[in-house]
Figure: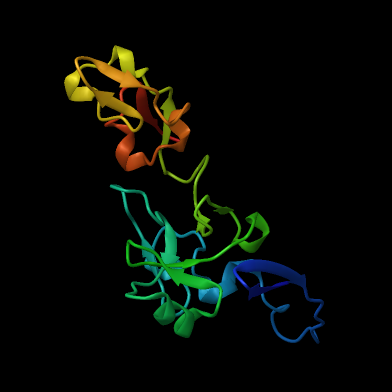
Length: 180
């Protein structure tokens, strides 16, 4: 188990060794870490306690993961423990430092919370390469890093479409959503 200590803006990971007396269920597992927040699901009945299975086929945020609606991180932490937070989509997530902090079949994403992505997740992946700015017309020039003058110029900030959110992928010339 890991304990997180925040001091002066830095995060320090401390290993904690614990023993259990083996009664009734073998102790805790990653699947029920943080009250089940972040574990994978297909239906609400697969989610423990005060969580529900989130299905989001638009932005793919917490898609097929157990979560709870929230207005603040304090609300998530009061219900599910100190290693949870409320993201902008008003959903509680499990915070992570690396993949070992996450429930099975999830990974620690770029924003520090456990995500269900990859093969079998149903979450599409943005693939391809952004079209160079000079090849874009006026209506397509809105790609991050490109600007319109008398022609489209600049360099796209992403060199691969994989760094682009699924909800923005279709609006980036050269990128497309592919099932996983």
